[in-house]
Length: 487
Image 1 (cartoon, rainbow, N blue to C red):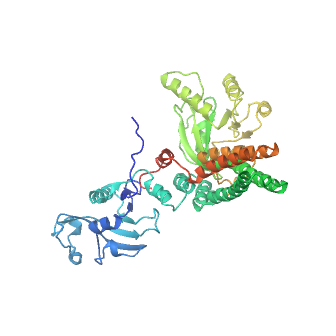
Image 2 (image 1 turned 30 degrees about the vertical axis):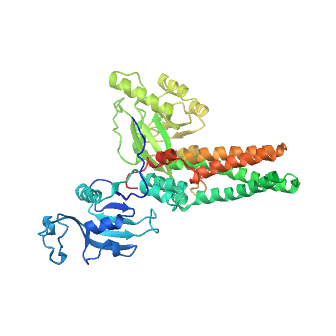
Image 3 (image 1 turned 135 degrees about the vertical axis):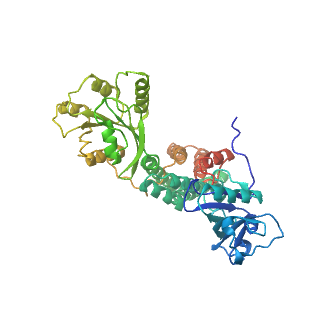
């Protein structure tokens, strides 16, 4: 039974490994909270003998993380010739040689005291240091709890907190730019400007509601409508840009399909610019779907090479064909490949018919060989038709251009303009825009000011949910559960 995230207080001192588990040059263990420095005092011995608790903020110190077996022992680092053997004569086990960084509240990531220990990046030293910190009073952080504390302590708003995950998951430079813009507060500034105007409008309306004897002038109502219309247009622009923002953030699911032996795997390899898929002259070589993410002009495309749609000869092929059909049905975009050396057959016709309602980029492959395909016929069926040779890498750049143009519908995607890419934000903006439009309609129909004021209050509620002025524990759990533990 899923009981959700366990609730812990903000007074706990938390710790986690903040780097990926595995072999690397450096690993980082992070501690945050009121006991971060006292815990560091217990486990860290600097070469100069300074305790972390007396060190200035934003200072870095060289030394050793140690596990002491006797609280009365004094470790003499000047004669530390036994450190490579792990156990000193004074009953102190050396865990690792480290660099320790002190960041004092409130000028830290969480606005709490933070200690970061940079050790060797192996799984053994990282876990040994983490266990030692836990033994000395910290608890293991929940997923995203460091960023959650940054939000709850007021260092960043909720939209900025979500941008941290977007940055971590960015698959292209453009997606990274969106995340950076949001982390800098670009979206939050847009939202706060709209909020100020709505609050001013609401204040004006409520003043007239409270003092009905003072009639609202037509000039005031005209100003209210103008302000609401300006906001309505801004929201429409943001929602329009969000479609492209989501493309940059989440990518486009694209399936390569076609009958057997038309060169689907060769096309995948050409797009990836590496030999990822096995290519042979034997029909049905690809027996399962192959998925890769490629970056085409800043757009992340999850490209899937499927098994040829054939009459299956055995159970494996039957399952492969079923899986291919499933991916085709759910794809955002389909690259339908034809063999230019052969005439269209019944299998091609079936695929053309099945894909009538999908966004399709038709591709004639093998143009380096003698052509037999009825190209004019395909031109009449498909608006988007490209001729290539995947094997000879011919016209692949034209194919990439056609993909981008089809995805963006001829528009240029700007990471700065597409600052709304998060589905949660998009849904809230839709509701916000709905209530603003409703308020304008109420004004135009001379409805009571109470109705208009209520529409604006509802709009403000959705607006505040974007940046986290209003939130529930369940919402925070859902957002931060997607983070890794060390962030």
